[in-house]
Image (tube, rainbow, N blue to C red; front, side):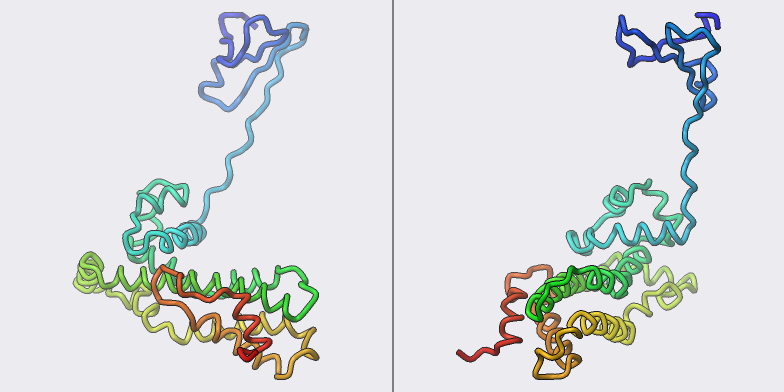
Length: 261
C-alpha cells in the first residue's frame, strides 16, 4: 500500500515497534487498518461493532420515567427538563418526542412509583436473615425506603398540578380537547384503587418472607404484616423531610416486644 494513502494515528508514540494506521476510507466507512513493521501480507481490516438497536418509543418512555423518579424526590416540582434529559442520557428534544409535554412525563414517572413491581422484587431479593426479627427488620428497612420515595414524589406531583404552569397546561389541553383525563392526569388523581392493589401485592411479598417463622408469632402472619405496614407507612410527614421518622429497627422492636418494660 502506498505511504501516501496512510495517515499515522494521533495516539502513536514515536519510535514504537508497531504502528496503527487509519486509511482514508475510514473517514467514511467503519473500517480500521493495522500494519506491523514485520507484516509482509496485506493489511488486516477490522470492522467496528455494530451500533445497538435504538429503543422503541415505549421503551424510551419507560427509561426516561425511571430516570426522572430520583429527580422528583430530590428537586420536587422544580425539576427541569434539562435535568431529566441529563439523567436519562438523551437530548432534551427527545423528551418531547416520547411525551406530549413535561407534565405527562412527570406524572408517568409518578405512576411508576405507585407500581409495586420493583418493591416486590427488592423484598424477594433480600438475603435469608435466619430469624423472625432479622426478616422483619430488613423488610421494614426496604418498606421504609419505598414509603419515603412515595411521599416525596406525591408532594412533587401535587405541587406540579397546583402550579401556575400546571394550570396553564391543563387549560391548554382542555382547549384542544385533550384534557387531563385523556393523558393520565385524572387516572393518577383517582388512583386510590391502584394504590390499594399495589399495597396488597407488597403485603403478600412480606408475608412470604415471614411465613417460615409463623410458629414464632402469636398472631396470624397476615395480621403481623398489616401491623408492620401500618407502622411503616403511617409515620412521617408528607413532605421531603424525614426528621420525625422512627428508625425501622425501633419499630420492629416495638412490634415484636411492645412498649411496656
